[in-house]
Image (cartoon, rainbow, N blue to C red):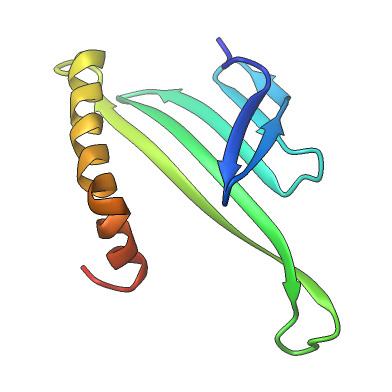
Length: 120
């Protein structure tokens, strides 16, 4: 089952629609018209269940070696649930996620700001 089509994301106060570009048995992808933003969701089932939600973001920026030329650079952020086949309900996994989300979004994302600054 796929997410609603299209998805949308707001980055730096700019909302970008992400229509579905691919779907398969256990995965879907959504991308911006310019291809610079991609959202993907995937699931794998084996000894453990893995559920992944990923955002890939790219932009054009000045090439540090040739400042008059632009180069494409990119980053990604992803969330992975790695759950044993037995022992956790979806509600329990969601409770762990909710606690973690509360931790890292507290005080205007202070923990993530520190992490990106190299703190551990």
